[in-house]
Image 1 (cartoon, one colour):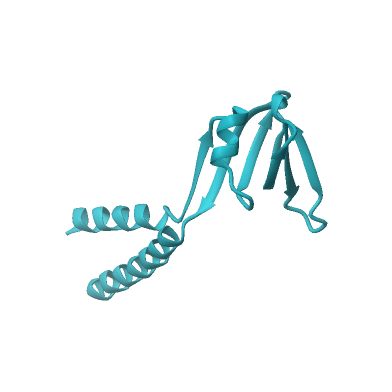
Image 2: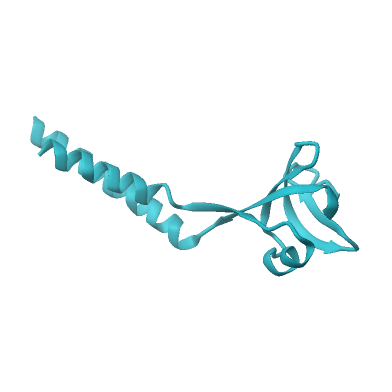
Length: 118
């Protein structure tokens, strides 16, 4: 019984934690134009190892443009040649729904198991 409990909790946690996803992308200019969409949330690491998190706007004249996630929405321009790596963070509607369902199942299961233990 206890082994089944552990397996069930582990499975539910895995499902619950897949709501968001991020992936590293090839930072060559041609690939970026095909991969990135306006509104994508990016984490950029430059050649000096500085990290910048921004919302992608466009690539123009060899420069990646985006807005910082601050109250002012400061516009940032980063030359493509200065970019070491880019990670795109996306929120998946389906995965987010699974995460919500996973939490509901987790709490329900814990409640049932606690009631049985009493």
